[in-house]
Length: 288
Image (cartoon, rainbow, N blue to C red):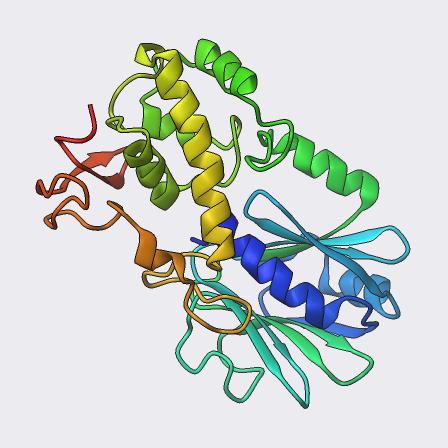
């Protein structure tokens, strides 16, 4: 699943292509990905303009004219493809031949624009969704999701982090970092990297953390996410940026997915454990 840097990268690429475009039509063959009947999408969307492309947590938000909004989640295998006569912009899961002969068998929603260009939502496993809300409904939906703060926003401070540690003292550190009610966007990849940055084992409980370690976790979250955004995300097998290219941060990964290989600092063998059904990689010597 794309994490925060990957979705931010897709957002930045798409906003250059679709902002200001007017919708001429909408179609979908997978109505479970919608929150209203298809005919309502078609009736409400025609003639609306895309005004802003933004992100909340791991979701994209397309702000539309007349107080409407698309909320889009790519989930595990979703892909957005913007196609016009002069360019093709791809973001998300690298579906082989996913942007050939569009729409194709992977295409489950299509936003058409008056200039004859299109935004296609492709998805192999059909877990992703595209929902239509007015401003009040969107605010309520996001509130019900109980999302934590954005990790690169001014609201994310060391004091904020310490307050949540007091609320969740028995959480393991990796689980705590991945809890979207605390802070959004720190998924499996970046939680491993943050723990390595702070020299902390992912299995430790947050109540054991010293002030210096909390400070390192805080700095690690911000520094690593900012570096990944700058490098346009991380790629292993399920992400492409909004130009269809692999994210560059994978070259800077220290421990995630590298179990059995040597630690870049001490050269010890990186180990792997299972935590909550997810694999976690760490250095047994560097991380205490």
